[in-house]
Image (cartoon, rainbow, N blue to C red):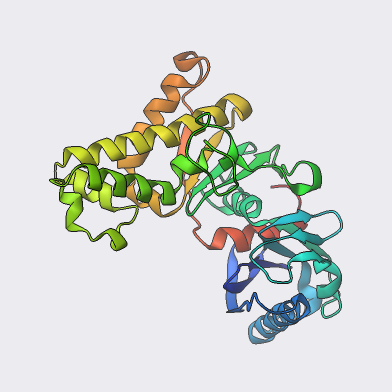
Length: 316
């Protein structure tokens, strides 16, 4: 038997045929067309699923369920997208009902960050663990919480906004409208802002070899490796911002494993080693507790597909 996982993004709809072990057998994607009516988006999603099954010669009778990982505020119990600003028509969308017009199978809905975390627990860096937190350092700071092998969502599936814990009272303005959120300091977007500020303050820095409009999350790390002191300060400060939030995650949840995702993780041990040292030192109880396991996410974009597919299983 198989499961269907759908990663619904603002740009693309990615569909995967997933086996019972959480392995993707085949994938297909189509443009989302987020400016369209949602009925059209769901129709394309259904056609994409059916085309994939036909190409793989898999009958609908062999499909247990369909899971959709979606951005936004969701009512997962009723299968409704309450609100998602990524879509022009993203208000009170009965996603389960719309998809079942085309495919008569159980349909489950989950927040995209939560299902990515679930995917890593099913088949990725956190496989074999029952308690895991996944943090994604990207445009923002995304979070997914797994407790007792299940996704924790909170009321109206709106919990788990880990990037919006407070790091600095009255600090940097966050995209949510509040000041001082972890996201405003630890996201890749924040690292770019911090890098640009250091470049302006230190015109002698080799970071200035990169044009301002081409600065990215690697700029400071690359300059640091060339011995640039200003860049090293940017990196060290950024890692402390990330680590401070991770300490909070450990103190609140005490997971078996912390999973870090996002392009910044390509820095490998340059990022992970100081994060590990900081968390082990400052988490409540310090060295009296077992070291907190921190790993880089393994599945990349496939995590959302696998996690969504496995929503039909409920637990790992």
